[in-house]
Amino acid sequence: MVRRDSHDERFRRLAAAGHDVHGEASFVAGYQPATVLDAGCGTGRVAVELARRGIRTVGVDNDAGALDVARSKSSDVRWLLGELHSLHVTRRSGAPVMFHVVLAAGNLMILLPRGSESRVLTRLAAHLVPGGLLVAGFQLLDGNYSLADYDDDCAAAGLELYERFSTWSRDPFRVDGGYVVAVHRRPRD
Image 1 (cartoon, helix red, strand yellow):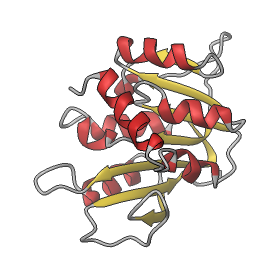
Image 2 (tube, helix red, strand yellow):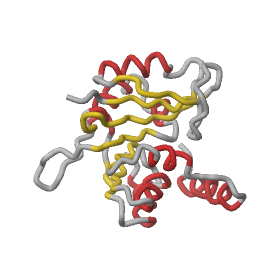
Image 3 (cartoon, helix red, strand yellow):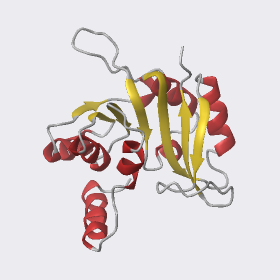
Image 4 (cartoon, one colour):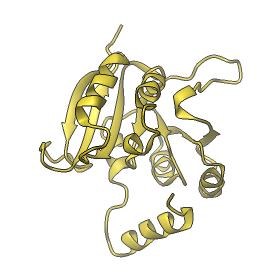
């Protein structure tokens, strides 16, 4: 497990060196969503930036320490402790909360416990409005969760492929590129 302070420090160094550390937020903001669920939000780097851009954002993670760090960065994001394979984001009334975009950045899909990916995608898809987008970015590594498996699991969750890129900068997808940013859509009813 990556230490939370070293993860944040890495991005502080990159920003100080002039690198754009908000590629994921810029990518998501390009779809002009009103609401975003940042699944596996960690210490909140992306969720905080989305909220700063005026997007109502909820961040969820299973690491209480990471969420403590995230809470210290912003009170504009609703931070939730929970497991993605059993996720149910609700309002105080108990009504489900639906999102225009659900984001699974930071290699989330290849960091999940092996065998839980389909359940996680089903839960994430259940939080999308009709026409809503699931956006995931992850490395394509031999012997790991594959893009074909991801596409199959998205289809089983009722999602259809919308777009695919090789970077958060929207570079065209290349099979041999080693990284994918996949966008799947929940069909409109």
